[in-house]
Amino acid sequence: MLERCVACGRDDFAAEVWGQRPLLSPAAQLPRDFSDLLSPQMVDEIIAERGVRTPFVRMAREGTLVDRACFTRAGGFGAQMPDQIDPDGVLTQFAAGATIVLQGLHRFWPPIIDFVRGMTSDVGHPVQTNAYITPPANRGFDPHYDVHDVFVLQVSGSKRWRVHEPVHRHPLPDQPWTDHRKAIAARASDEPVIDAVLQPGDCLYLPRGWVHSAEAQGDTSIHLTVGVAPFTGHDVATAMIEALASEEELRASLPLGLAPVDAAATQDYTREVLDVLARLIAEKQEHLSDLAGDALATQYLDLTRPAPVRPLATLDAVASLDADTPLRWRDGLHGRVDYDGSDGSNPDTVVLKLPTKSISFPAVCEPALHAVLEGAPVSAGSLPGLDADDGLVVLRRLLREAVLVAL
Image (cartoon, rainbow, N blue to C red; front, side):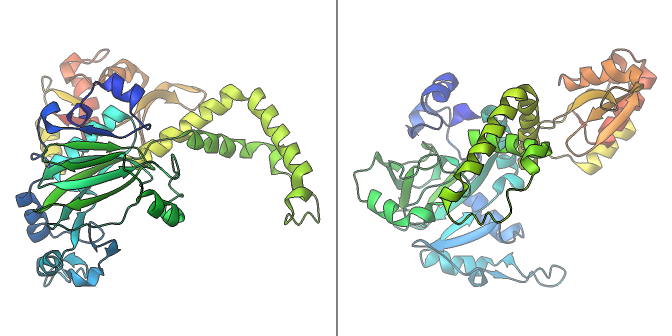
């Protein structure tokens, strides 16, 4: 999916653009427009017919959020949730100049679900998508920066974007733009790095920290923001420090009566701790690297989701499964095969370890599980190490556990 958004090769983007500078990619240099992902008709359907609730919808006018009571109400008989979107209220606020923000489209709108799954695979970092629908000649938010990278996909209408150099480069999630209001206001008065009107099919990539603002032109503007939350060196360092919590030297109390209100008074102790950290990191470098890698993997899995499964269709597939039925690994699901027990103490059992559970099988199933993990289509009659009957037992279980899906 990345190639839909950037007018350069993947390697060039990774080496020269990613996290370093903005990139404006005109529609003429991209494979196609973005109307398959969202359109004015789709926006109306989401608002009027899908029963969407807050916080999946926000509204903002001239930099200020609109009170959600202005565009939500209870769903009525049989749907008494108090915060469903009220199309009448949305119409009133939109006509008065408020921008509609559709949040988390990757969780409920099928075209975006597929697109985000592909983008997540391409960039290797968590991805999400919002939509911004802005009335003519209006803006939703003041100049600001985001704490994640953004691909702006112009869907319909046009919007003028002004992009300025960062005032705080590579901000972390707990370093929002509101910490730098004055500096951002001053930077926004400088000559912009990019001052362009995005037309349908154009894409603008912005690394986190780059100051930007946008204003719709003479018609309603719809654009998607594809947000990427990149992992950083700070994430690795934090994971390593957390791993060192098992070290007794670092858990020991500092001296009685320390009262660390004077930095100078604590310098000797902080130097001692830094010396201990340096020694432990040098001694346990490989072990800490493994632990930090495991922590990042856990964080990644917490922030991403595999492709959704269809429960009724899955059970139908279980019931009709035969030796020739092709199945494949569920997109976006991560797993590995290991022996039972962390030390391999039970060689008679192998375990398929998944983010939310582990599934045990007889050890004879190990070749079959590895074949399944490779991602190519498999069938009960083609699993290595098993006959067709045993293969059916394994595949039925993997279908019921939402590990495999029918083609």
